[in-house]
Image (cartoon, rainbow, N blue to C red):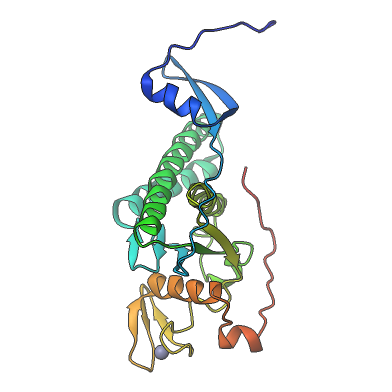
Length: 257
Ligand SMILES: [Zn+2]
């Protein structure tokens, strides 16, 4: 505790390759289950390939599914959502309990939950970027999340702080992974992206996961939203968003811890 010590690193081939590919940045020493872990962040210089394909993908991070992208791929839901909700319910119970032991357990659960969300976000973001590379996309379009709370009608449970930082974390992971491959990332105002039909750009209706429009278009609601994001990212304005600027009364918007 009172002075620095030098510790030699014993590296495998994989670690050596990673270290040589970039610049070592921040590091953290973690003690978990009687074992010490050393996490080192390597900053890999951006690959300036500047892909010019004019293929733009929208990435919608959602409440029901972790993400949907406009190649019609939906991530998450199912088991992941179940586990996330389980943590939330447990956390709510412990919070309302308030005893010392509940607080201790809450701390332990929070750490576990954060690691689970972080891991999930890494897996999903890696998948999204791989998908973008596969279709030769040159730009990913995501929602500017400072707007998201005004657009989602949700209960207290859904609006919980955890969700906010987990959304933002997923976007951040997608952003840095995409940028490393020369894919541009753009954040746009998502107003009306979930209510507008991505086929005819009129207002449609959304019931749970299904989006329906008078024009006959019907799709998974998150997929429809991701299509609209790609459309906005291509320089278009959704008709409703141009006439009706929403008054965003966000209130208490917490940022990532
Ligand atoms: Zn339509």
